[in-house]
Image (cartoon, rainbow, N blue to C red; front, side, top):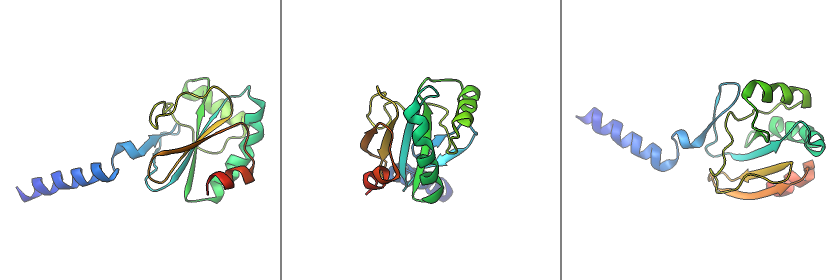
Length: 144
């Protein structure tokens, strides 16, 4: 009985604190990314988008240089994972791609302009939307 109550209590604490599957996103690499306590950048891109291609090196650098920020990509065209992975390779994208577009997860509509990047705070709430290609300085300022 104590074990059952303990398991129920642990499940409730996890659910209330956000330590459940709602704080995880799944990538095309088959990984589950735990986003709890991290700032998340969700970048929408497409192969045909020239400004997206210009922005990729900046996002790659941010993803590699900052442990407190997770950069995740979403293919705007909604391609199946193998095609999206292939296009990402052509563009030089080194950050993980999401298997599913998280539309509505943070109360934000599907972007109308590319590139678009959502900034999600450590608390798991949408903070702002950046439209157009971002420089390292732009992203640094937006993350303050």
